Image 1 (spheres, rainbow, N blue to C red):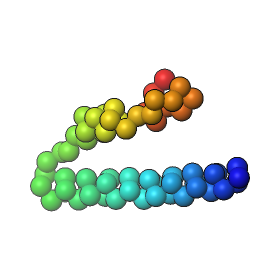
Image 2 (spheres, helix red, strand yellow):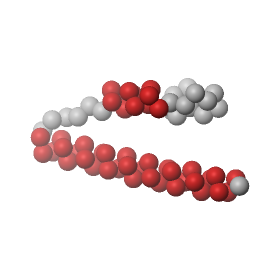
Image 3 (tube, rainbow, N blue to C red):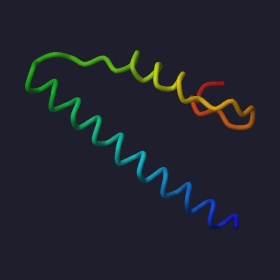
Image 4 (cartoon, rainbow, N blue to C red):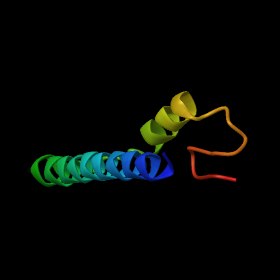
Length: 64
């Protein structure tokens, strides 16, 4: 059961990594085409605030 859970987490991390890479690629392409610098920090903080876990054992924000 633990091995299956670890595999599922690994698959989740792979998917998240793929999504992050796509976002960063889009950001770089957008900035190159428009000459505008995108600041995603505020949007990322907002998303983390909405989706953070209530668990005291796991902190989805990466902050202590």
